[in-house]
Amino acid sequence: MVRKATTAEQIAASVLYMDDPQKKNQNIEMAELDPKRLLKGETPRLIDEWQLAPKLWDAIRFEVDHRHELGQFVLTGSAVPPDTKDIAHSGTGRFTWLTMRPMSLYESGDSTGEVSLGDLFETPETIDGEARIDLDRLAFLVCRGGWPQAVGMRDEIALDQAIDYYDAVVRSDINRADNVNKNPERVKRLMRAYARSQGGQVPNTAIARDISGNEEASINEETVATYINALKKIFVVEDMPAWNPNLRSKTAIRASDTRYYVDPSIAAAALGIGPQDLIADLKTFGFLFETLCVRDLRVFADALNGQVYHYRDKEGLECDAVVHLRNGSYGLIEIKLGGDKAIEDGAASLKALSGKIDTDKMKKPSFLMVLTGVGDFAYRRMDGVYVVPVGCLKD
Image 1: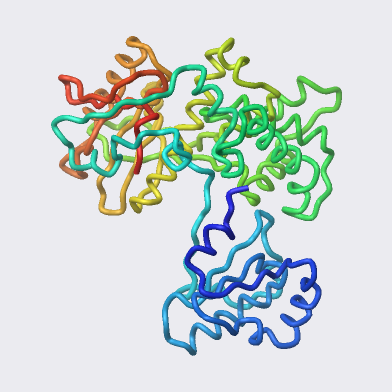
Image 2 (image 1 turned 120 degrees about the horizontal axis):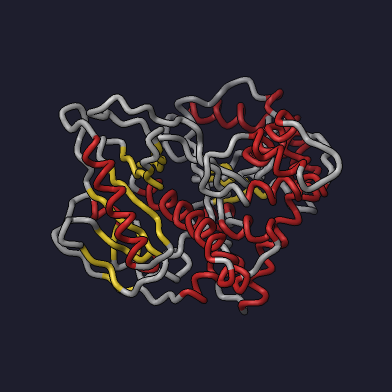
């Protein structure tokens, strides 16, 4: 769904499609008999669906060691993890991993990109940007998701892409993650409960109670953990770790991960809702909008060599997203669907957290930003807090 091979083809000089229906069996057999033969070709050489023949990993590692050149191979694989029993070497020092995510609004052409997240780390005195996304369009974008195939389709067809993806996860992909067959109806209930947990630090025990409360047979937290781990393996969910800054006080920080799907459209599909349902239920809309923003921030943070965290302490102070770069710079972000009061509340939380950070032991935040869904313009407030509609943000 995220078009890994299509992206890799743009830089590849030669390609081997391991799953070519006419050559699949031959390719797998050749990988057993003489894997080096499959590696011949102009470089960078793309090996698509390499996990069909895991022994290729060690063959490529050996070839890289003896060629003494960078950028020799690009390996792309499906969401289902490879069988590692035939892999002898971790690949440390030879392979670099790249996570492919669904498209951000900027990549799909829905954000004007007039405000750069990277530029905000330079703390500009003024910013300027205009978004062209109203509430109805935003609801559609949440449900459509960032799937490349959906971009440019008629709206009603575009919405089906996420539903088709969800159905594939429920019926087959989650089973292939660990080769354990799971009851599709129970998977649906798990994914629905997980969708209701978006943006929260919800333990497996609470998810188990949510599921058990809606079906006759109970489910325990160990089973919930197994299902969620399978979803993580196939990159359906990606929880957000907690940020642990140096604080002036001895405030206890909550270390639980925040629950997120990799794309808000999966949550919408799991809940069986569409754009008009979100308009009618702004609370749910807000949770799924947060998932959309986290998706985009992760895409942008990857491009900036950074990661995205969340903050919450036992005094109730929260920060939805902390973009932390490798050089130690970081920005604090509150996510709000819109409205003057919500923006004021977000700004107050950001300033409160900023004031608790011990800047003698770490850098002060590069910026404070309220990221909104509804709002026409990006601007810097008198107190220095940036207000940026997601419809004008880029990396």
